[in-house]
Image 1: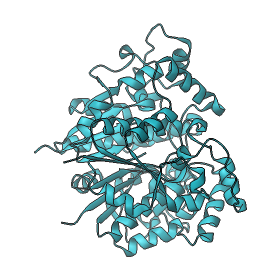
Image 2: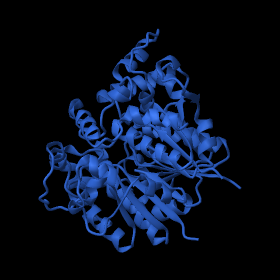
Image 3: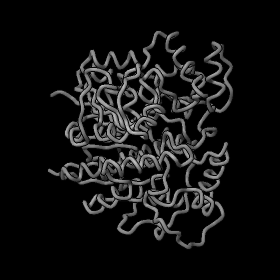
Image 4: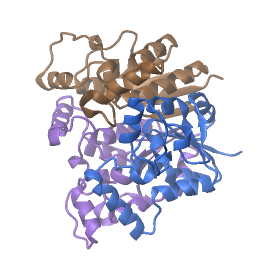
Length: 157
Length: 157
Length: 157
């Protein structure tokens, strides 16, 4: 029987998203069926780096502007130091030949990890499908629960 | 067999508590037996809005004063902007006809989600039963584990 | 059949680490096989208090210096107030005859909770085995997943 790993990625921090994707990639390598359900600030990891022109209301535009556009721009949960922390971490990742967050996300897509964006919080934060990476699935909390209730490893990150 | 969802709500952030209650309400709608175990800052979601007159020691009084009195007063984990963030989120929730945190808590009570307050951290933070919502259960980590060890979805938020 | 509790401790906050160790000690008391997998900032809970002389690169030295050396020096996730928050919490813990984080860690070791340090993030943060408490195990994400996939209670803290 295939084992299931289901992760809710709520956090918009670079380091927490790294942890989520490292676990997800590990589980996929062990033949788990893996789903990462991106909600709230975790949606930012799925944003395209380039700006996408979309008509939005005032608050939605404000949120889009203030939230990081894509994994590369996310900050650290600790020792962020106004953006210097992420630079340090990326430098060290490079030195140790480890993988950056965008590389971990690409690997997850290659390994067929299901990357799901929470449609309810997309609505709230004013994010549109055109702004997110290709190959993403769109679903709500019901779909998450259907996966999670049979999950062997369920995490909220 | 009834499925079980058990959530530890440690966080005192409005957005994280929203995520916890959205998952809990979803699981309850799918006939899971659902428990939210409120500990540390998560206890603030259960505080009554009005001030309750209680004799407390100095540090306990200080904690009570500095911690938000109820869900309505909690801040965001990201982009709080000294209280402007929560206003934005509540405005957007309203616009999208979504539910605010107090509404999500009320719905959880209607759906018989077990709302449990951790007695050990109530002691530490100096919170008394009179200060918390009606219909709350009081228990310790042993009761949490008894639920969680049979849980299908266990999350720490 | 022995039940399993597996906790990823990612957070470097005193209060979150307390929650992790309280759950772990509770589960061990109920005869669960318990593992705490310390990764990223959670590794700081395992650092020795005394300074260990080691040759390190510049960034690794910087990280070691800026990160708290051991459980006693960790800050709170909320109401830290530049170190005053942890003092308040420890004062209250003392008053209520509860256990501090270092005491909870010692109890976990007595109860044979498996304290594991994530080797990959040790590499990234430049932490060496000599800097961590005695009796720690060293492993990677594969070992974590092997535990977690049979776990009854899996949490990410």
